[in-house]
Length: 364
Image (tube, rainbow, N blue to C red; front, top):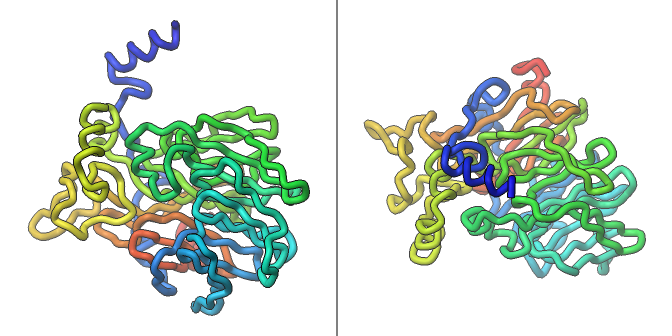
């Protein structure tokens, strides 16, 4: 009863979950052009995720598993479904999520059959990450939408995300938390996992007992995959950005229902991994060309962002591809050798940034 009263008051006054305010990109999130200045390694049709064990670097490109070496990619294996997530396991093992509905763990990539398979109850597995005990964290973004239907889940205010802990030794899959607002990324953090809860724009900690706490709230973006940094801390990707217009649409159920029923999904008032390719795209308020130029500070329909976090999960600095850039839809970033390797899914690019240059630029 009390909760219902607070919800009514928030809707009446436009505060709490009812506010359409978006935090500014400022402080550690101050915009720059670092992702636009990154070195392009190559382009591919459907880059999705990266995984490394320090000695090898793998890339998921649709159903193809590629090994990256010396700025070139070599096909290692082709699966019968698109790869939706990757993770390197201890030893020479590799975990692969296929179509968002199945997770296979291979002891060796040459093995024809997986060491363990998890295929019960998954709908949108979008990230995998090994635990310190040799198990695997898995984020299942939604139980009602597939792995590539994230925009629909956002427009439906989805809150069916789940975090699993998979045990290859006995084949068990334990739900650590459910009822989350689209989870997209996890990484070992203390005695549990650091998890991206995308539609609530925050990072949360989930303990082994399922207890949760907020680590980083009120982000101006929708966070996604997380990977560890060798110097301590983490790299957090953000696959799309928030805007006032989209926040307003999310609070108008009648409009959203008609939009989803009558309009082609690529033209919804919703975030995208890339934008600017069609005149049919909805106007985004200030996201209009002025004197033939799209201003970098215009409201973004698509954006590129990576946030460097400290060991406590707090931002140190960030790397941007702004509205007038093209390296948008950043879904994965991992350290490999002397570089940070990045997937900009919007243009289908794999990028590299020198870790030494980032240290020099930001002093962290």
